[in-house]
Image (cartoon, rainbow, N blue to C red):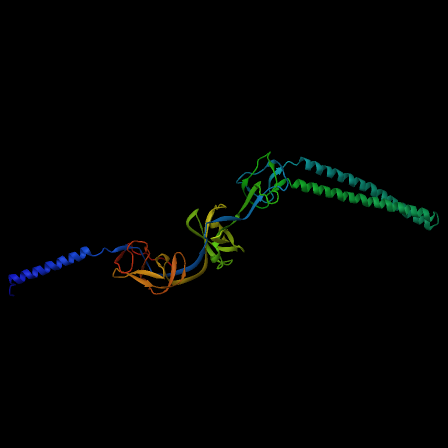
Length: 390
């Protein structure tokens, strides 16, 4: 092989050096790929849901703010805060010595009336027998008809007196019932099984019933915590899509990272307009399995999410990857971000159904808020996308 001339050798070396310099220059001046977070397009379940606009709360199916219907001084307080009571349990009693004395008086009057009944009715029976004998004697012409009329009138009078005293017995019994009713008004009993949440009053203090239109503190606040539900405000526009019986999920601040299944039990038939810009409808969701969330307290902060529609095994993307106009950025195999317009359908805060414009296995960018993330730039996945389960 003929050796290269010195001039040709120097030219070849110069070309190689220029190529190396150009390659180094390109490598050093080429923009560094942007790190992005991506998610794989996959099949799964997509739901359309409605959620509350403001925090809801746990409420009891039965809650009674109790007070005796009669005012008076507290004589006995038989429960404490946190006590569990059974239906009919006496919670407190008011001073009722005057009413008890009145009831005793009524009972004495009843005994007197019964004694009068025995006396009057015995006389009426005797008079009736006398009248009968008079009629028999008159039939044999032993006495005059006028004497018979007198004995008949006497018997009728005695019988009327007997009937009158019987009425007095019923009147005395009615007075006893009225006195007992007044006495019962001084006794506060539990209307159902529950837990005593609050007590307002101590022995010796005076309780006053609430006048019409004026709210006063209840003597005892009783909660039936065996039946709980969540009540939360839903925007009036979203509330029109709901109906009783729809399933949903309940989230409690006290049980982080957990959801409890439930269903809509009531939709308020009116709109709350506490603020002109925030018109809402109160929606109640009950727990499917109340035992799952143990030790719930009435008043716990809670959120609800009602499932309006759902589809299984459909192509879906994270909703955070969706840009205005139903556009997404796809990280291609060449490491370039490519903008796509897709057709969507069902959507919620987590997933959106992709009907066309993208294929399973492609990767969409979810970190759209990062600087420099746009179509045409070079990018690299920050982490290997994890495949979500349907």
